Length: 567
Image 1 (cartoon, rainbow, N blue to C red):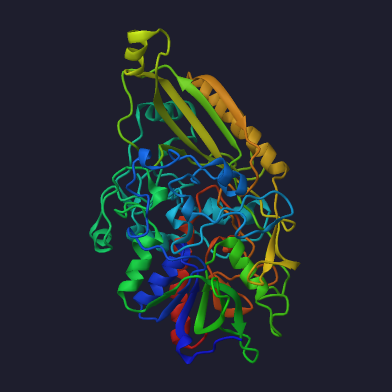
Image 2 (image 1 turned 90 degrees about the horizontal axis):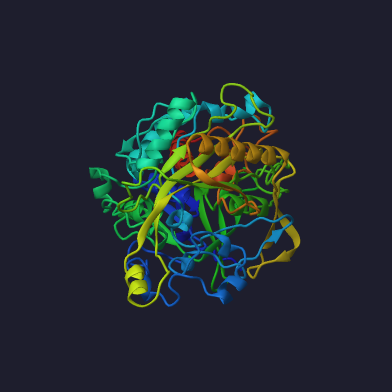
């Protein structure tokens, strides 16, 4: 039986404490709203609960490697680059939270306070009107209900608080932001940038923009954060707060207001709907440990559980008013699910600049090549385009020839090799109706919740785009004088990009979308969804900065509507 306690009433409920949920909590509490945040995983306090953050490699039992037995038990999550001995405690294990793959999909999750904001790669780029106007121009998905001008001030708002390093690059497809000093490119990255400038009119390498405090401002010091120390151990949790996470930034900020209640191990089972008004009145929650059911009530609900779980929550929120799930009157909830195509890489070597090496570590990861395909007109046999990373480094090697004192001397004095360069693609995929998230009709998890079924795959557009990326970069690498070029057409399943988007897309027409221009559910205007599920298309940029901006904007709108008595 549900525990209906009158003390369970709040002004706002936020489901999830990751990047978007943390922002919703900050915005509501800062404006004086008593806010409940429901987090289905354990609590992770900044600094206190980062057990490996200051450990040296030799202090790890397996030298940072994941033991074979753990890999065997976790074939999905162990494919993630950050699932190592120093951070695997922040990842959901495969057996603990199963799901059904109608087609292979590697769903990477982090159930704890802060969610995946502890683990993200921290790359941050604004979208432009090339992205927001893309579906309408190119004839796929539906038109976005917003344009760049609508979100630009909110990008600025969240950038100043989060702390984003970068340069003013003056690129129409990648708008400039409110930047801290950028991390510099190294000599070979600068060489390739110059080569592209001299040989291609529309291609460039920029310093990758990232959520690191290269030069903290007063607002960051007020949060208790400090300069990034360039340790590049970010997946462990940063004791300095050098990179942005909910744990180091928005959640503590919300706590300081006295208006935040954070409940952990709280699985949102469904949104409770008032059958007389059709509006949401709260959230039904299952305790992950005791399985006790409790109902919490509020005037407005923000859904921020990450794309797949947020869609599943709405689908599971059935009532007499919303028989197919909350917001699913048009039967599009869960449809048009998409991702980013990371399935191609290319590497090479460079014999120049041998009088230079790298010093220290770059938390930005090196360079970023913004999209240059199909920007102003359709010029290829595939829709949309791709961005790419680009980085260079010199590795050391040891001469293992010889014996005795000569071998010992060689092993004790490693030498620098030539430069290794590499790139990976980040391709925009086209959302399709047949790509979906839905609830299984019979199989349940240990809390009695329907298992989630996921069906998504690459298509012909992705194949053509990948081939173009490999061809274009091989050509550029050859012309730049790189040698030993190796193309890598990876076989990874969708999901390892960890950029799942869509399923509850924004749009102008309630008949063809789930959310409106302010992330409100068309059919239930006091429910908002601002995580990846809201995305109408995927662009080529990393999406988290856009989630932050959309969330801050949506909370501002929700507060305005509450004050007017509209919700």
